[in-house]
Amino acid sequence: MRSLLFCLALLLPASALADPIESQKIITAATGDWNGDGAIDLAMIVETEPGVAMDMRFFLRDKDHNFLKPAGIVQEQMYGEWNGYDRPGYEASYIEPELTALPNGSIKLYIPAIPIDGAKTDQTLTIAWRNGAFVVAGFAYDYHDYMKDNVASDCDYNLLTGKGKSSKMQPDGTSVHKVVSVKGKVVPFAEWDSGASFTDCGA
Image 1 (spheres, one colour):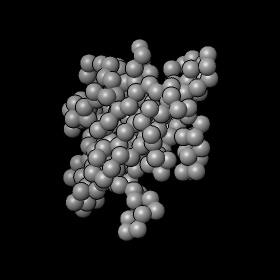
Image 2 (cartoon, one colour; image 1 turned 30 degrees about the horizontal axis):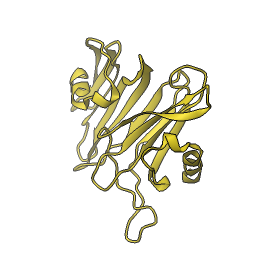
Image 3 (cartoon, one colour; image 1 turned 30 degrees about the vertical axis):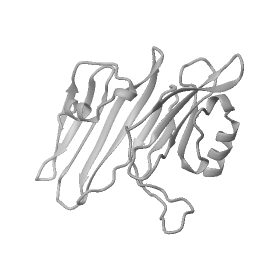
């Protein structure tokens, strides 16, 4: 996988890489037609340094000149375990974000959580190109406390429409399901606030 990502990096022209990217720091990448112009675009997640949030970089293909041009860098929206690569004394990371291109041209961003005291909250964002910007079109989370019985909840809703659903496990093991219905909004990915999305879910 990393060798494929390295090849992707090599295919980018110098003009698309104003800031050099170490190939081993490319955690994941996805290609698809983000802006619906019929050309294949690129998104990638790049590690920065230990304890610092990862960057998500977007590239849109210039159809006239057939090259990928930078379309934005979003910082401080996702964390993961620092990957030491081949450096002595470091272990490989098993908690890293994942990117998937969706058939409709959107991007699925899965952000697994680092467990804290036996509990973890994994998040999934749907990122879409709208009116010249990448926005968060959908949000979902899955919370589970592995140290306690029947402590779990989840939510999945569309930020653009404000509609979705959530559920919360009860002490007896049953789940209460609710409809999420809030005001729809367009939130640029760079300005997205996870706390607001959890509030919309009723968490």
